[in-house]
Image (cartoon, rainbow, N blue to C red; front, side):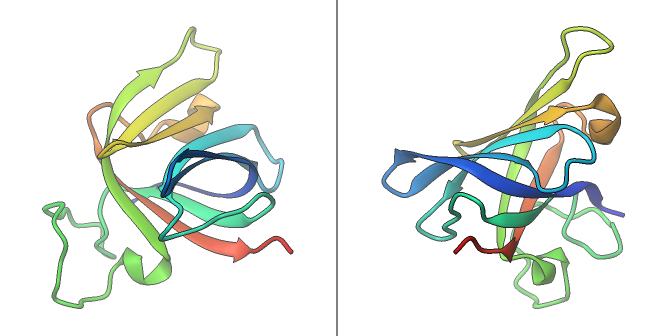
Length: 145
C-alpha cells in the first residue's frame, strides 16, 4: 500500500501566514494516541476552520496498486488516490528529529515552501524516511458550524 500514515485530525488553531496561506495546528480527532500536526495550506483553494475534522494521509505514490510514479501530474484520467481526497500537495521529507529513543519523533516536509510538521510516537511514523518524496492528502469529514 502506498499510504505511509493516515489518521483523522481536528483543527484547533488557524493563523494567517500570507494572503492565501493559513497555518493549521491540529490534534487527533480521536485521542487514541498523541499526534500533533502543523501544516501550511493554500486557504484560498481549500479553507479549513477551527473544529473542522479531516482525514489526513501521507503517501509515497498516487497509484492505487502502490507502484512508483514520476512525481509529475498524470493527465490520463486513470483512477488514483486523488479520487478519494479533496486536497493534495507533493513534497520532500527534509528533517527527522528525535531527541532520544523514547522521545516523540518530529518529521518535517516541505511542499514548495508550504511546510508541515508531524509530531508523535515513533511507532506511528516509522514508515516515513528522510529525503523521501511524499504526497499529502486531505479530505474533510466534518465541517464546524
